[in-house]
Length: 208
Image 1 (cartoon, helix red, strand yellow):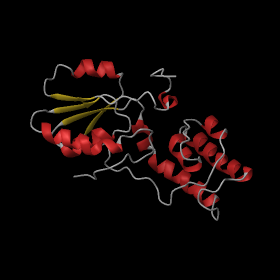
Image 2: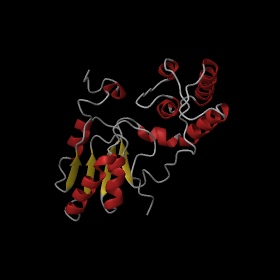
Image 3: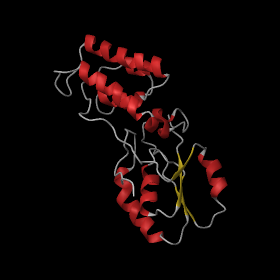
Image 4: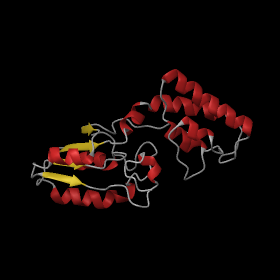
């Protein structure tokens, strides 16, 4: 069996790791009564991953509306970018604020990678150079912020995280309609909360 992740392998706002114990208990109670788990608001996929680990014989549908799978697929490129940033910041204390020159060097590394690759995981990169609680999804947003040396010592690992999952990218209503006819399906409904920083959802929820 592949590794059982207790938290999402890449940063994600509201990744539900504190919900795992209760969710696992529910899955264990319904074992044998269901054949499908449908995670309508999949987020980072942590609940879907857990469902497949606890109930390996079940079909698990992970609704990856945020395209987290794209970030997972780019993890080697992300690690290479963060390694380059870490090397450029050698000698700087952890959590120390970057000078304007250092900040410009970091932005140059990210911009070069984006131009070369066509797309980079700005969200994960941002978590390594921004103060805790700050989230960005584009290079333009990253340029607006003060930066700090928060690059982690090792790289990110995500091998096997999506193994066995049926990954879809659908409006939750369409997915529910597709699966609602299965009386042996368990639907997981854990949408973003009203207090969630809704900027991460690109106005999909229109909570502002």
